[in-house]
Length: 189
Length: 212
Image 1 (spheres, helix red, strand yellow):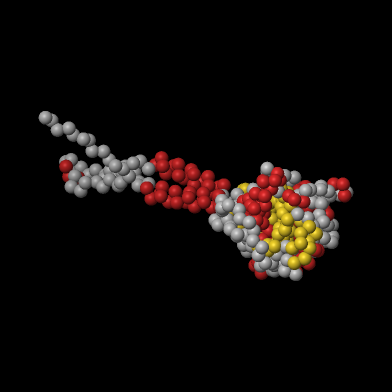
Image 2 (cartoon, rainbow over the protein chains, first blue to last red):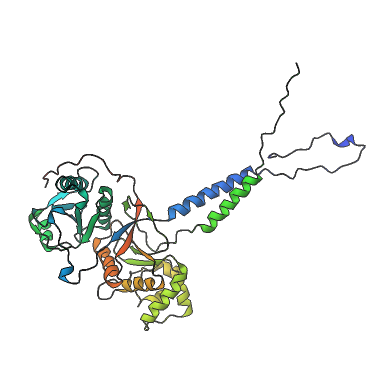
């Protein structure tokens, strides 16, 4: 089937000198053709699926139009994360804190551990770690990768409620002083 | 005892059917696949765990230096979009060739004022042309207009932001501002690649140390 039939050499003269045309097989070996086709299929399959980019979703809140629209939240639930230059991350809890603490993006001993720690703490007091609210802010020196990393941390640690906000002047002041100084977070989310 | 003769069977198989199937699949994938359009700028996108797939979106790309580009994957929507933008800005006049040139652009980053002149360039000149980005300052936010008009063309079209890893957060904030304030879009996507290293660790949370 998949091989070429070669006519036997000495069989011609058997039939009384009559010259018969050689019977050639019409079958062609299709194996290389199939090989090639599958190679191309693989190529097109891979390129089509890889071409669709991955994406993460980001929801921004609508601006509160009146002061009444602002939601007051329990400040115990808050964790503020401020992204700064050179991949530095500053963080503090609640609305008012005396100092900012500095950490990094890392799988261990970074901002992720702090989120886990805060979640544990809230689980102990409220019995539900999903009460936690993260506020992500970025100074003008941060880059886009930091922002995506921070949002990715929200996904990894399973934070349900988070928001992006503008950084507040007292926080900028504290960052300038290496984290020292009272920070006031006068936001109403 | 008579010897049991095992009939010799040919080991070769008929490949025709397999060939048919494989070429059918090949044709299918060839016709459905779309090649990545040539990008006006190279953008190194950040990693994340997210695996949402997007299709049929408008993409706002932000390059390393913070210039914004707009792209619409659906070619058939571009004509309508351009008409709408020209209606909004009657001072800008384009002839048929310029309109055709716009339809062929997968990604562009120039202001409306520059548009007639950029679209008149031939392909080689266009390649060499340094695109300045779409204006997105709060006073003159053309990016917001593009997005808003695209939404009028197709209400369901999603918005994706494709930023470079190192692009400054200020320009990303400007894009977000254009989306939320000018186009009233509060839900959008950030394009990322799947990373291998940021897998969730299951280690016990530790007390954060007071490090300075």
